[in-house]
Length: 337
Ligand code: PEP
Ligand code: MN
Image (cartoon, rainbow, N blue to C red):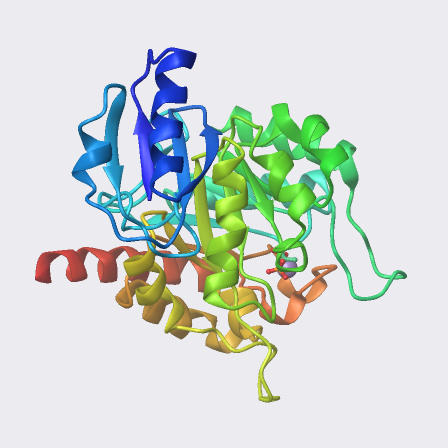
């Protein structure tokens, strides 16, 4: 059960509600987010919910039997929308497009990508400066110096930035230079990082772990939400299976399942999801048809020279064509609905 408390409720009023909830055999955890205050109540006993709903200081109450609570659609039926400012909104009703290189490599590369995004009406650029790499000898990113350059060029052109944060100490230093923190697949269950991201006032895109289940992803999201940050979106980026014909198996099923289970926006990452350039467009279109609220893809002025994830990266012709197809597919789908 989740109880949303009235905004100006006194300590005494809150204690009264907690006492009532405890008396029916439920434990309470207090959650304060940037938007509201809640009591998340865990218990099994049957009771008449009107007992709680009628108490002074209760703004709203719902029974939520899922292990994840605040991110569940059972708590919030309407979709969450994330406002990045400058009329750039992520969530149901519009398709969010995000694109950029796997790694930020140089000023020339960022400038070329930004120009391509502006020409194609894409408002959010991705690019890693702290790169999780399987080998310690591989390029690990340009770090803060790269992020500052990335930020300067994007700001000059009205483009928003999403970039991966790998550890708690990077949250603060990245804060003023990004618009969305990305949590990568390898950190999907780094609970210390998730807790810390609950304390920031910027949106987070949380990726599914390579071997993570949908329920694990939802519970990871609950960590961030319950530590205070409601500006959250989830990302399907493919899982590890026995298949070897491509890098990962994009779990298309996850898109409608997540859309039904959570009110958070659901973003598809077909670049990592399949990991082979030639198939990225097909999987992107399939993800939109399955209900994704946005697509994040890897693009580069010269994909074959990309320092990381070259095999799954699209060039400007391929991505320009794909953006147009994605937009018309989304419009077509919404005319049907
Ligand atoms: C990336 O976005 O470049 C990345 C490393 O993604 P993932 O965490 O999904 O592997
Ligand atoms: Mn990548």
